[in-house]
Length: 207
Image (cartoon, rainbow, N blue to C red; front, side):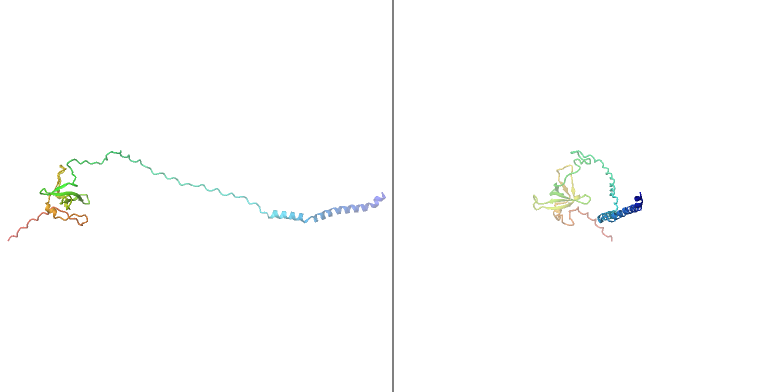
């Protein structure tokens, strides 16, 4: 007992020193940690700070719906008129009975004295379609030595009732023979016209 009491102050000092020595050793161990561990921790912290925050993904806007132009209504088609039956005569026919008209092309022409004047080979009409003159192949034999002479339409007389009868020309052969030859290129054309009416003789003056 005397020994324990005698050494008690020393024991207390040793315990106190031990209690103080443990925290110091822990601090030294923390200070002596490897630079790689400390650097790795710092790098991870800097990377965490430097890394940008992820931006939210933006989706492209949906394309606008295509608008089609309104369809225009098709024009109304009227039904076509029924076609005439093949072989059916037209509805605008006009009848000319026998004796009302006659063909004159190629028909013979006689003079006022009954002499042969030739044949009609052509007709001349005006802008209204009215006949103005007939062209006669005058004189010659079988087309040799003949001339074409144009005579006024009013000099001809027709007989439609007799299709074979020749046409009558109210001028003499000598008058037709003296007329100039008809040529289409001549301007103006010269035709045989009806004889002009003789002017009445003027009365003698009274004394």
